[in-house]
Image 1: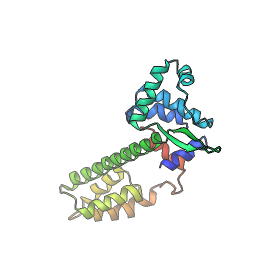
Image 2 (image 1 turned 135 degrees about the vertical axis):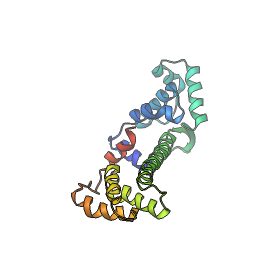
Image 3 (image 1 turned 120 degrees about the horizontal axis):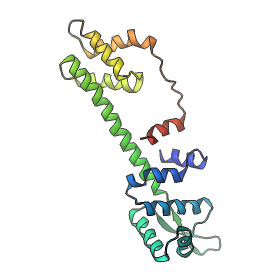
Image 4 (image 1 turned 60 degrees about the horizontal axis):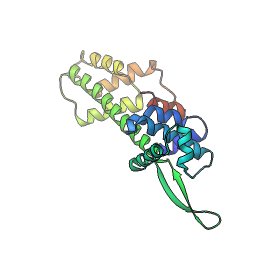
Length: 207
């Protein structure tokens, strides 16, 4: 996902500043560090790779000492790295990078998406076990996963099919699966599989 974020930012489809302001507190940054990170990224976008604390302090309305302290905080947290590269004249030159923010954001969003997915699975399994009055087997849970990820059956549809299955002897998840396929699927309007990448990202972005 990091490459996707980088591409969307490069194409101006996403705004780096907006991402930082939305997620900085989730990633362990304070407000001052977030503002400085945004400022540093703006320098990178202008192809300025050298940090000059005295000039940077003026743009932040901070003292040079406070600015240096914030820079050190970003370095300690990994959000700012400074490297030595060889310039065209053969001399070594310091350049800074802020890549880690997107890496940290990617980890956070993936973890959040995984937690959300577990919550959705739990809701389906809990509803079925309550209706059928018995625990689901591992195979049953695999079928439920297919309903969620492949068939896009919402929870209300599954509950309706489960209640219909109760009218028959020995209702099972496989029976519910057949009911969903035969009775619900023909009238279901399923989303297209050709999904817009930016819209998919915003599903994660909008908490």
